[in-house]
Image (cartoon, rainbow, N blue to C red; front, side, top):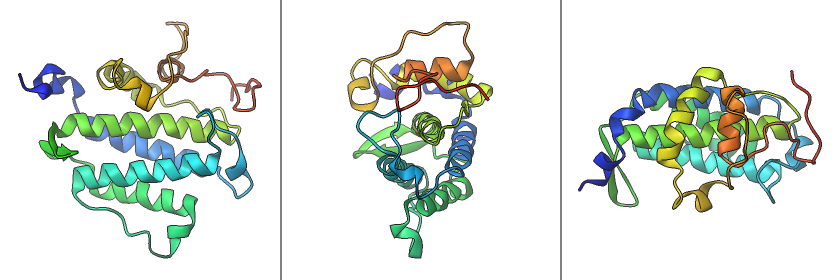
Length: 201
């Protein structure tokens, strides 16, 4: 049986819109990064903010290449990680608002909706990581988080979780969707990277 039909691509709906919203969210989070904060701890164990930004930059390039068969030209900003993030996020917004029916990942065919939704999930949660590393309580927007919560079990399975995210954190089902999403992806929604608690707002 075709792997793509096994995970019901039609459930991914308008994945391009999710990707657009996630990319806009990470751009907003990146606005708080300064030279000083690049040394801050992040919710990603063992990574400081500089390492996280480099990872997000790679992810943005992979998503753009997968969906648009193009990668951004970072030009003179290639050595400036935050400028690179902004450039690649804007490039993605400008070129990948749609998605092809089929793409190829690792040489294998994949429904474009699944690729776009997977990119949205990765970008959104790392946007939250960036905001938290900068000391901000900036939840993933409710509508985006609600859609991604529905898709997360199809993307983050028992087989893929060890390579993508930490074990889920037990959290209230009555909590806001952004908190439930990051908890599902292995984050404590109210913990600061330094071990303290971050106040709301």
